Image (cartoon, rainbow, N blue to C red; front, side, top):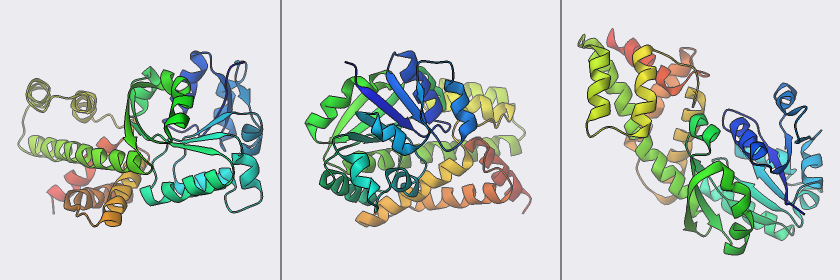
Length: 292
């Protein structure tokens, strides 16, 4: 009998991930608080659950792709009598990004409730999510990780074992700190190129041909040149990740001046009304400062 997989959270990342699992023939049940998104799974082989409890009741492995630690606690009913029922004899796979210290305490609570826990944050956005090209950083008990290997295989192009929890989240946030440097350097450089009156197609050509060429640059340069702010990773989501980078650094006493500067620009973009647009819309915050 195939493993029964529950998937909770159908946001910008969760939706394409769940659809990938469905296309791969996964025995899948889905739930999200936005009932409109569940309509995508009607007339498919997926079970459309009526509540998180319904997901846990019928699943062997439950994948959580949620926006915050509070959302995770809510669906798990952590701190209530429902928590042991939801966790007992199940594998909870936390794929969202939270602070490492939170994940460590969640692991302890799930194990105490008779469940198993895997920390599997992902590198990538909605585009690689749709094509199964995400990179998984995983931490936890090796037997538990082996148990979910076939389950998550349709979602990823590579996986890296990071050790004990919360090493995968620490790895994700360290990698994201590097990514923030690339992304906000790209925004700042693009702003400078525009202010200089450069031909933006030529700027793109140089960026994609030189040492800066990378999948991120090749994905974001067209959006910046065309001022296409349709979301792949939103300004709001990027800000949440920046705050977690800062928080993870605080947990271990590391300094993050680059992240803090990027966070200031992201917050300005939100104030300007770009919260739900792609992170490329932060260019508007740079442009706003040009006249100051």
